[in-house]
Image (cartoon, rainbow, N blue to C red; front, side):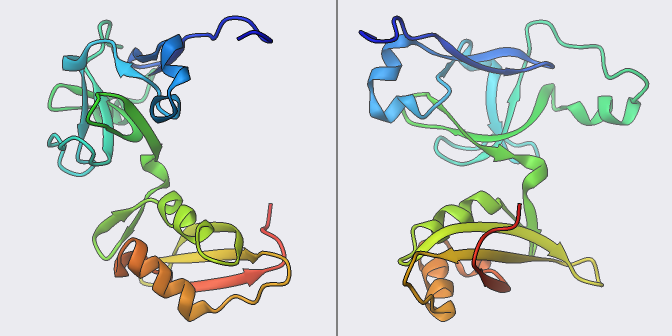
Length: 197
C-alpha cells in the first residue's frame, strides 16, 4: 500500500447474474482469504450445487456456482436452448465451479465446460494438474480428456520433468492415486521436453 496506494475491491459475478461476491481491502492482508473471490453480497442468493442434479452441496464441496440474481435476464437472443439451460430449480447457473469455505468465502475452481466425465464421475483436469505439479521431479503438467471410438472419455496427461530428472510413470500414477483417487489416474502420461502451446 505504501508503494502502490490503496488496494482495490475485488468482485466476482457474471453478465447473467451481476456481482455476487466481494473481497474487501482488508481481506487482501490475510493469506487464507486473498486467494478467494470474497464473500457473497447476499448469502441466500448464492449456492453451490451439484452440476448434474442441481441439489445443494455442503460447505467445502466443489460444485457449480448458482445464484438468484437481483435483476435476472430474460434470456439469450434467439437461443431458447441456452436460455432453458441457464436456469434450474429457480437458480441461475454460472457455468463456474467453486466452493464456499467455513468462513463463507468463495473459492473458484474452474469452468464446468472444462470438466471430464470419466467412469460416470466428473473430474476437473486442473485438480490432476495441481497434483502432478506437486509430484517430485515434475516441472509442468497439462491434463485433458480424449474420447475413444466408443465416445468414452479417458484422462491423458503431458508432463515436463525438472532439469536433470528422470520421471517414473508408475510413481506418478501412484502419486495421483494416493493424492486424489484411482479414478483420477491418467490412462496415459506423456513425458515431454516442453508442453505444446
